[in-house]
Image (cartoon, rainbow, N blue to C red; front, top):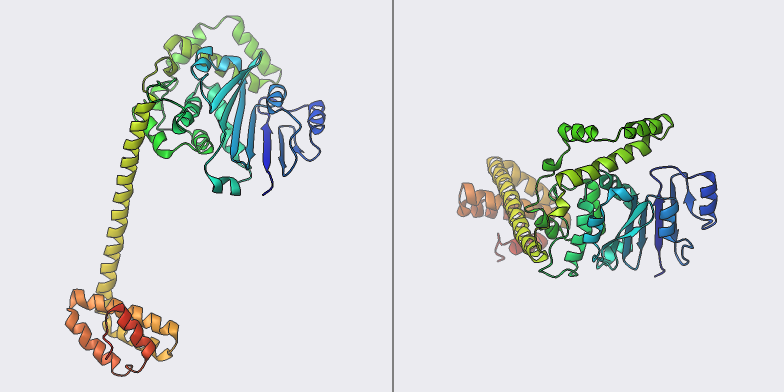
Length: 384
C-alpha cells in the first residue's frame, strides 16, 4: 500500500495576502490554495514546508493525517489566551504540547500511533478541519476543556501513572461541545474514559459569564483600552478587536475569580476507576434498551398472533395458495405462515387444535416432499 499524507491549513483571523499565496505556491504546485486555506495530499512524495513555520507565519489551524495511523491537529492562539501556568501544567504530556512564539502559542494535539486500522484505511483526512477548528475559538473564550482532552488521551494510552493528579480542573466535561467531541474522536479517546472524567465535573453553566462579571471587568479597564478597541473597529479590524477583547476578558476572569485550572483534584487512577464504573453504567443502559426493544417486539408479536388467529381461515387459504404455486420460495412462504399459525393456535386454542387443522391441510399436499421437509425441520409436522 502506498503512503498517504493529507495537509490542511486554515487562516481565521485574517486572509492571506497575494504575496503570501505566492510564497505558499512555491511550496506546492498541486495544493488547493485560497485566501483562507491550503490543502494538499501526497501519495508518494512529501510536503516541502514546515507545518509549525507555516502556523507561525500564515495560519491559525492545521490538520495532518497519514495512513501510517498518525493524526495531528494544531491551533495558533495569542499568547495572552493561555496562562503560563496552564502550559506548564501540561508540559509533560505526549498527546498535547505547546510551542511559544513572541506573540502566540501553537497548541498541538497528536495521535502518534492509532490502533484503528480500519479508520486509516478508509479516511483521507478531509472533513476534520470543519469539525475541529471551533476548538480555537473556544480556547480564546477561556474554555480549556480541549486541553484537558489532550491530557486525557495520555491517560487512555497508559502514559500517565495512577497516582498522578489531573493537571487542570475544568467544568463541563459531561457537556462537551461538538468540536470537543470531535477532538476526542480524533484522538481516539475511549468513550468510557470520557464518561468517567465527566463524573464529578461541575456543570458548564456554573462557569457561564454573568453580566456582573462583564460590568466588573469594564469598570477596571484602563482608560485608553476602549479607545484602542474603537480604533480597531473603525479601521475595519472588527474581528481582531473582538478576539482581543475575548482574550483579555478570559485572562481577567482567571486572575480575579480563580479558574478551574488552579485546583487539581483527581488522580489518573481515580479516573480509570470512574471509567470502569462508566462502562458498567453503559452496559446496564444497553441491557435495559435491549429489554425494552425485546418487550416491544414481543408485544407486537402478541398482537400479530392474536390477529392471525382471529383471521385464521384467511391465513390457511393464503398458505394453500402459496403451496399450490409449487416453487421453493412459495414453500418457504407457506412454511413461515404455518409456523406462525402454530404459535397463534398454541396461545389462543391449544396445540391439539392446530394439529387437527394441519392434518386437514396436508391431506392434499403430503406428496410435496419439499414442503414436508420444511415443516419437519420447523418442528410442526412428523414425516410418515
